[in-house]
Image (cartoon, rainbow, N blue to C red; front, side):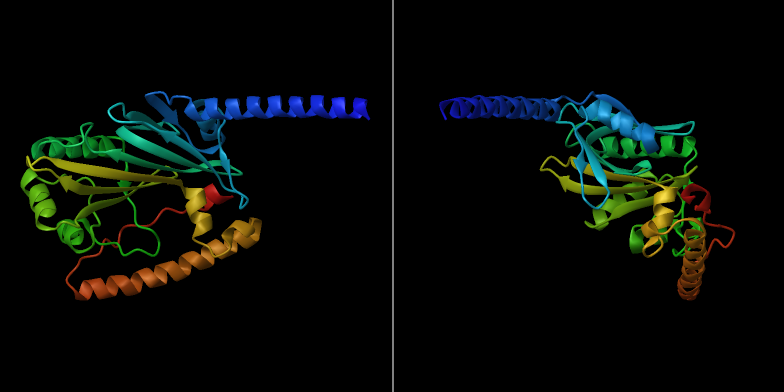
Length: 291
């Protein structure tokens, strides 16, 4: 009986030590500082990237989606390079990144950042950062994207669309300082919403003025959302994640037909309101990324 008690005590001590070591390792992983400059890919390469920067710390969810987190604390904000195929987009002043992983690897990357490094800046400094960001996006080849169900409001209606629904329809057009100031000073809820596409990746950007201080300085925040075309294509379909092969293809084709029909109705309504429609635009076919 004494021998059994002694063994039980030894076992309990070993279990306690293992538990403490595990907790220590987990804490070390969580507190591991994120490098100031990181490069993130999609797919399995993206999983390797996040594992490198997080020490393998991942939030596994029962629904089959897992998440990676990266954080930076002001004033030492992050620089994130979003890479796919031969393209790389460098985004600065990043507070946080959330990577979404499915069986095929990283399918989504969401980021929050400041437009400027400093919390508050002079109005013209904020505008200058906006110009630099849009210049880089255009130089990298990102193009206007309309989802199959979204009306294709033409770039001639860009400013009207921004004032009506925050949606930018001409990402190549950089607002003048006067237009920028008028938009954000006349409407406290004003945003600039960009929907862009490049070689299998959809990028959504929201830029919003969040605060102004007593010195007339301003704060603007950015929200980036990147998703693979395969992920978006499957999620256009109700229950798409449960389908594959010919069934998935047929469901995708049927969904696109319904979406384009809905688009036509919206466009007719907008034309009656005086908007022009870019009828030459065709939404990219995502099937090649969904196979």
